[in-house]
Length: 235
Image (cartoon, rainbow, N blue to C red):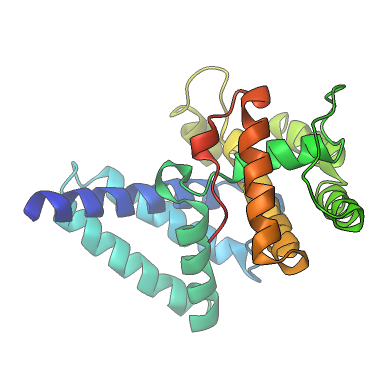
């Protein structure tokens, strides 16, 4: 039991460290709405996030101290914003930084963009065995969610070239060569859009039709080097 509690604490703290690392950065702020987080005072959240990371850095991996710091930080967020914003942030972190990306949103993004002709692949997959009107509606949903993907890539590329603040430069030092915090931002945005896309598709299809979509996804997965067993319907 103690080992399980300790593992649970480690997962929870790692989740918040990942979230606060992004929220602490200047160059991430313009992408918060794209990532599914709408807050009116990002500067206040940024200050709290930086303080959390600085405190965690000084704990020498003392789990009890780190857990206390996290609890105090969550209380601070409610003080510098309001209870609703604090709750929205909490739900966003729980949803966005799921350990191991268990939701597998990126797999659905690859498959559905391929089916809708979005993403630059020249080949076309076999489409799901659904009514043509349903297929057309799914394609429209996918294209709508990813209509500005090229513009988003441009914005991310431009942000990558901006001069780094002292804080942002320190965060970059934690990343391996060739990798950037903005890669995490890009992945978070795609996950958020894919989640929205699948919710829209769920309102369009019956339970039986969603099962047909799932079977199609599993059948097509190997073409994109995706393991079929990793494809699951969103809860």
